[in-house]
Length: 198
Ligand SMILES: Cc1cc2nc3c(=O)[nH]c(=O)nc-3n(C[C@H](O)[C@H](O)[C@H](O)COP(=O)(O)O)c2cc1C
Image (cartoon, rainbow, N blue to C red; front, side, top):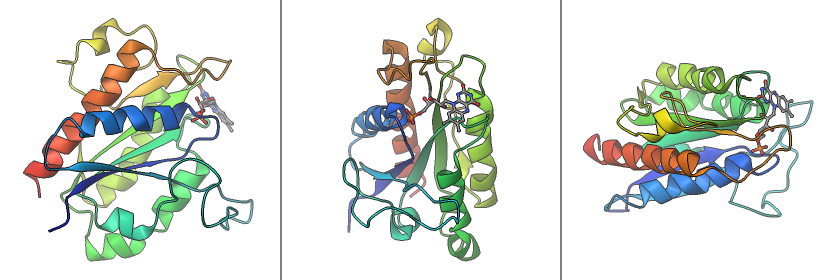
């Protein structure tokens, strides 16, 4: 049998979300018997066609629908764009109707993470915007419990709904220690539940 995996699917234009994805994968790797699969979501054009080449010039491979259908758990990362998920992430989700019809994501654990330039610029709302369609898929939503002390001590990103990063107006992609710990905790928790729900 193939090793089950938590799919970490992300879209990142300037690198913050990509950095977070790697920390979430580190959390997944703390759990034995399951692995992390990181895939990036390609950009889209104004005609909503995929504009990128098949192989990305840098970073993780582009996501395919099979990555989604076969995952044991799912974490989606998106920058906060106007307090909501970025269009390429919504575009990917809108391509997943066949999985909705076959129920392939049903009962699998899911979570989301985000990065935003301002403290009150929509961290929670962006995560929530990703939660809605995943609940339509019948996924089991997992947040971040307050037993993670970093949720209380953080002076930047971090929400009980999912990990977040405060990139500030400079677009800083380096995470604070608390943000890193929360990404790892989220990855570890999703991995644990993915195994339980297999
Ligand atoms: C179109 C657009 C809309 C944005 N909207 C918001 C927003 O509503 N709130 C916010 O705090 N930051 C907003 N930002 C900033 C990004 O969320 C932030 O720079 C994020 O860290 C980018 O992630 P990345 O480095 O992975 O691309 C916006 C940026 C763009 C390009």
